[in-house]
Amino acid sequence: MFDDLKEYALINHIPIIKDEGLSFLLLNIKKYNIKDVLEVGSAIGYSALNMASLGAKVTTIERNLDMYNEAINNISKYNFQDKIEVVYMDALSYTPNKLYDLIFIDAAKAQNQKFFLRFTPFLKVGGIVIIDNLNFHGLIDEIDDIKSKNLRSMLKKIKAFREWLIDNSDYKSEIIDVGDGMSISIKLK
Image (cartoon, rainbow, N blue to C red; front, side, top):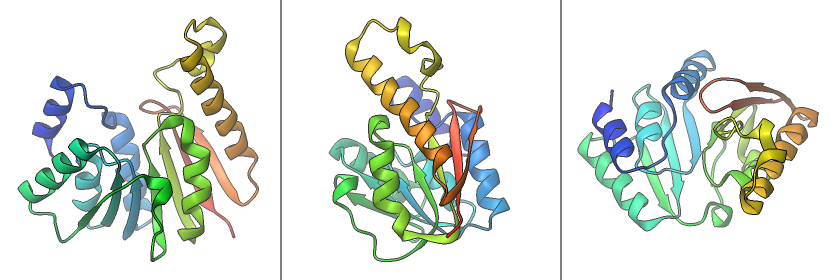
């Protein structure tokens, strides 16, 4: 479903979730009977549309005006306005007004821990957090070989976040080697 959006993203170099990652995300929406989703990072609305197609209500946050407008247009095109709310703002400035079953983080990779800490107070106990791109194109294990100081710095932050996530005793977390590397964390208390 939404193959035209996937093709558009590919042609226009817009990063969207990989097929394997999307399958993992949708499988867990079904497995955990997810009804309410908070997504950090909308891009063109591809993952939000896929999640909403399973019946979930999705609030998705996007800070890039062009991406926000594309997401709005795509959601309207598929007539999902009643299932998806797109919020235009920097995610760290957004305060949810309800609790969610799932928080899906697919935004600025170096900010994963800030997003996690910002939004998990709005996650129901027993709810899940799924985060994409934790292998960052397979580079996470090659940090020492990276010449770019900025890229090396970001990879170090992703690696430190992965370790922090696994050690966080309030969640049962697992890093899954699917797509571009994903985590799933279940809120224990």
